[in-house]
Amino acid sequence: MARNITTRDLFLKLNVLYFSQAFFMVCFGGVALCRSGQAGLDEHSTTLYKYILLVLVPVGWAAGYLVFKNLRSTVTALGLIDKLGKYQAAMLIRAACLEVPGMFGGVITFVTGDRTLLLFMAIEVVMFVILRPTPQSLVYDLSLEGNEKSSIENPETVLYQGDL
Image 1 (cartoon, one colour):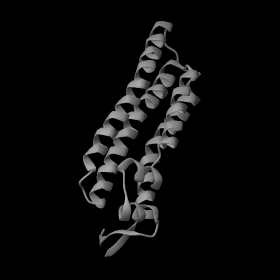
Image 2 (cartoon, one colour):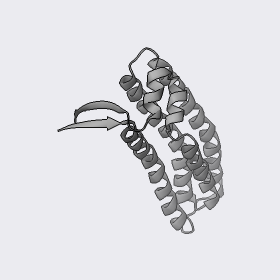
Image 3 (cartoon, one colour):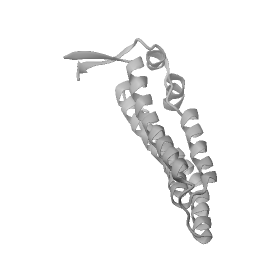
């Protein structure tokens, strides 16, 4: 059955994929919060994990930025559909790089019982919201102009017709 894929459909799918990563992180954070009073490691191990987390956050952000920038730079001579496929891959890889420090904070909370480490997870969720895919961010990230830009900004534009 042939189906038209519009810009609205594209952003719905992008956001569902993107926020499913954040949703899993938040759910695990909730489990870690409920269980955090029951666990506990020695103080030396807890301190070690905190230092690892403090290093992992900027490393995750930098890796996400560099990979996203690198993948984004490869789409200049492609058609719009190919650009959107590369953008989706770059966005998901960046989200995974952002998710790693947040999930590690949840795991440390789960293991050590230190609820303050969930703050790192909350910071990562805020970053997910700030960096979410929108038509404006896609136009900016891919440096779209002319027809491509108007196609993305109009939610009813048919991007693809084909079988599902």
